[in-house]
Structures are given as C-alpha cells and as structure tokens.
Image 1 (cartoon, rainbow, N blue to C red):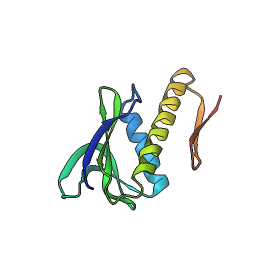
Image 2 (cartoon, one colour):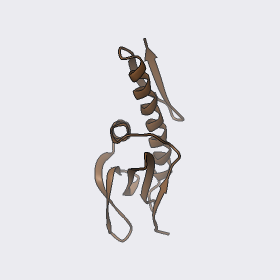
Image 3 (cartoon, one colour):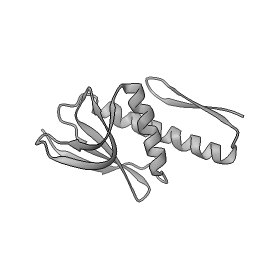
Length: 126
C-alpha cells in the first residue's frame, strides 16, 4: 500500500555538505539521479533538500536534515531498491562524517572510500 513516510534516523551532528557528498557518492555508485523533488503514488510532489531517483525507486527517496539529524522521506511502494538505498545512505553518511572529522584533525590525511555489499570503508593514510 502506498504511503508517503517521513522519519528521523539517529545520526546526529551532520551538515548539509556531508549529506550532499554522501548522496553524490551513492548516486554515482548506484547509477541514480540526484534530485530535489520526489513524488508519491498519487503523483504529489514533495520538495526535499536532496534525494535520489532512478531504477528501483519508483517515486524517489528524499533526505533532509532536521535539527542536525538525517530525515528520510518518500513513498516506498513499488520500489524494490528502497530499503537497500535507505541503509546505504546511512552507511555513506557515517563514512562521510568520519572523513570530515578525520580531516579536521589531520589536514594532510588522504582519505579513500571503499564500498562492499555490506559496508562503506574509510581508508586513511597519514
């Protein structure tokens, strides 16, 4: 059944730039389009900070930051990739947060991201 849902994830102290970087990286890996609008089953448009649409996401998946926390929104009906993307963005966002914090303490550190089927790894070279 179709429902537009909005919920907050317990990933705190994130910035818009962290979110944008994580979404861009995930879009590239998954072959998805970055957007600022998603729809629902009834073709109602919803404005979001940033989101993804494409193969496996019938109406798109949106992301906002509310009080420094990640908010995920959208209609998952007929979207077989929804739960995988929902989990992946959280992993990418945590990895991005680690990279930003590491770079703040070690400005010359080289940071690389590696993605497996189950995790996003952050490699740091000092």
